[in-house]
Amino acid sequence: MKVVILAGGYGTRISEESYLKPKPMIEICGKPIMWHIMKYYSSYGFNEFIICAGYKQEYIKRWFRDYCLTMSDVTFDFGKSDNIIIHSNKSEPWKVTVVDTGLDTMTGGRIKRIKDYISEEKFLLTYGDGLSNVDLLSLIEFHNKSNSILTLSAVEIESRFGILDICENGKVSSFREKSKFDTEWINGGYMVADKKIFDYIDGDGTIFEKYTIETLVNENKLSAYKHRGFWQCMDTIRDKNKLENLIETNNAPWMVW
Image 1: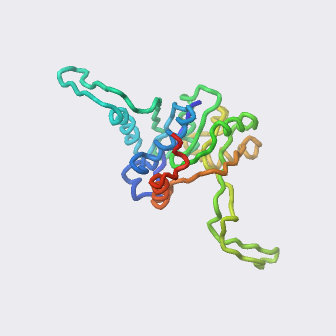
Image 2: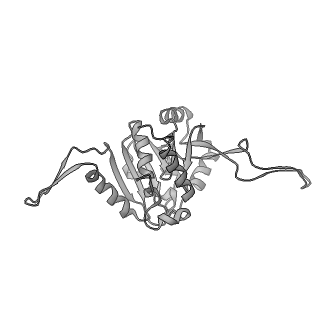
Image 3: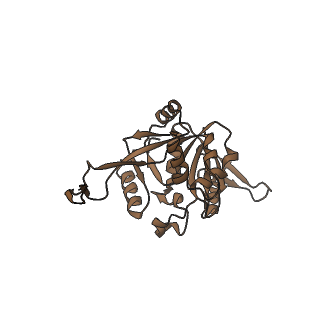
């Protein structure tokens, strides 16, 4: 199965670094977060990737172009026309297709634009800014049994705000500060999609998380695989520092390679 990664947005909430590079290429301990995502999929044997690029897409293309060289011993023979000889390539066995899906294209539109690169009946889909240790094989098995067009990994997060209990007359019966017991389920990415998903995307202006997913819900064609393990997105510098700290303390659950 191919792995499709959404990597085209502006990343404005982490603009301290995204003004220089696409958000998925922001480094965590020396490697882009997208590299970490790809390494995790690769640990399950998924080595073919389609990157839905947009903002600063040339940065992504250059990075993958140079990656093989940086992971190898290289001879530069200036006396020959083919003057680069690569020795002992240590890079991963990846096949990576980087597609320019447009600068202002919405998430659904980006997925629609890579339709011609999907020949299989199913593919994996995720965002380029979230790390997890979701069991991909169990996720795929769950999807195959669900009779759904899309299965997403639902992750549990703590409520960000205090909780109000409100009576019918508008009076507040109780208020409590947020706690680890006040949680909600959100879409954590790490999805499995049937090829039929393209029929639920009109074009560049389609927001996947709104129109496509809401339509699938209405048609009872969306499933949620509950993942109770690790998940963390990288929306802010604080999130980036948190992920780096997990690596530095040898406590990064996604680093199974």
